[in-house]
Length: 223
Image (cartoon, rainbow, N blue to C red; front, side, top):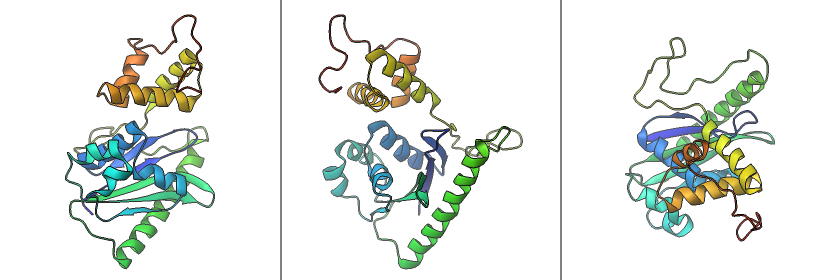
């Protein structure tokens, strides 16, 4: 594998990028979150691995917006494994490499073993985080003892600005949380912004989703 990223979905952190080995891995994770499409969402929905040994052509048919991001990256194969413990969904592991090719039997077994260990680690963290003074997972790029940058790719440990902006849009447009996030994604995509940039505009109140006076908040696309 060339690189990897780990994302968590927990009650206390709705979507959190915990670790990425390099800029490309982070870009793949962030693009799928911003666009709301890509193999990571298929893995979350089906709770099954999504294995794409050769990205040429397939991504353009299944995930057209995400394919535009892939076109600018040196990524030839992508493998996404859900992080689950029993009936509990905890996140995903995304692996990529720059040359096409399927996982061998031993490679897939190794990934599944590591994925299982990661899922249990996330579950223990989630349960501990729920307790006062519980442990927290330190994002890659930060030294746990000093808080100083330890790698070239430092990551935020949450997307709190996006979640905050989603709540603001929810109240402004009188829609559900899922619809509010969809509005943010649509605005970001149409204006060639990242979801984080759009969220900051909402928080600064430079961007408001309040419907014009006299119109129904549940207009076309919001019902």
